[in-house]
Image (tube, rainbow, N blue to C red):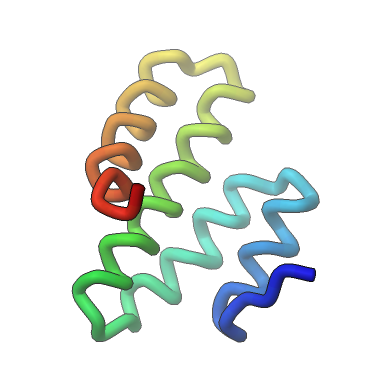
Length: 79
């Protein structure tokens, strides 16, 4: 099984349940409290990715594209 840091457990549970706006909300709290700039960048990328999926499911293509672009910029250094 995949193990996550304790502060990401709620996010992962919500992700698996496909509750993407709740993922966004849960991670935003963690992201704002994070001290490490690198981890903040990663978390912020996940926040944007969650919001992008949420917007896609709502049929908001423009909102999805904007959030996906922001997610890509934040997450690209980790690939």
